[in-house]
Image (cartoon, rainbow, N blue to C red; front, side):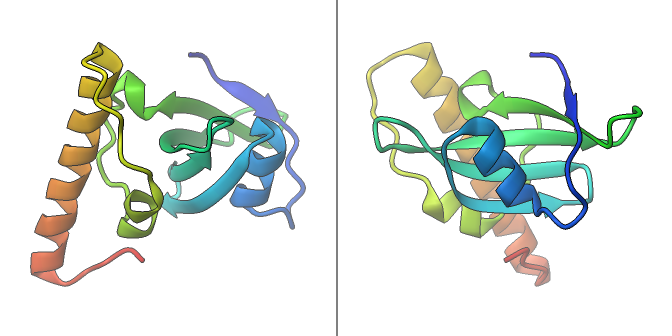
Length: 123
């Protein structure tokens, strides 16, 4: 899970960039704090799953990202409601991937509930 860097036209949105790069439909996309993009990605099986993309501009190529699927249990838990609401329910197959993804979603939901109490929704 290394970093990928490429040229991204300035006028191209983050959502458009990842639609083209991943070759899958990005159902929802929101950048939080300039450095983290939360995506709801429609997979080939029709399921919509979360991907966290860390963002950076650190090379002569103007756009770098590191994609972390929810099944990897990213330590970034600030997914906005519009992204979480776009995800399809996880299928409980008893696997570690299911458990990790469910824990990640639960942590994001807990953060949303905390944010709702102070009145600063993201979407």
